[in-house]
Image (cartoon, one colour):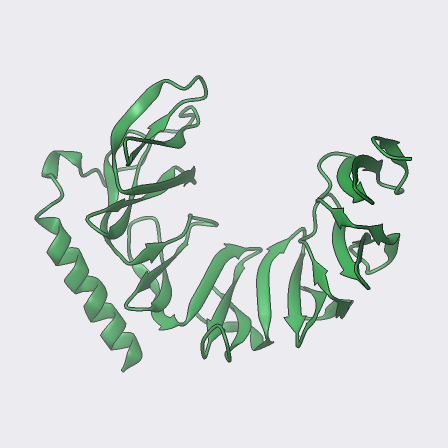
Length: 269
């Protein structure tokens, strides 16, 4: 019944916005490859897109706009979200209350407070039955059942089957083969099979980045690797993800750069 209701609502929104979307702006064909990157920019309260040099490519005309991913960008028109191609033409008509970026060929969308997933043609391939949803990564997506306060998180695959059962109090996208999850008030990491790799014993964490993840314990931040080994013991007031071979941290009141062994390279003793 929930699935049928969600599909009917999606269809109703599609019909209601068709009249306000000009026909010449609709393009359901494949977008060209190799298109230069475009970036959303707000001007005068409306959004358009510029290229890397700041040149306006798609004039400001949207209530909101997100970045392009997989040659599609989510935009909001008349309070509903749809998707455009880099040429500015509609790929998926505005019909959603919320819409995330495309990832692995699918995007999470929301209608009437229920989340599902659409493909690049706008077909609803995962029904609107979840209370929240994240992006697909590594072939699965984190979804919430029961609400963000009292509900549980698990992971589904693109055939709408549970890949990892909803047993977590919070769950995030997979990054470099691991996802950070919360059990009670503690964070850890699981692999794509749902096996615990990093025990849920940290007060906070970031996602895996360049083979290391920042973790917080007893008020200090450090780093663990993909096996759960503590590579840099928690000793920083704050820490950012590694980019390349370095990361920015705060030692006392000062900012510093560290290498992958935790050696301070600049900024603090």
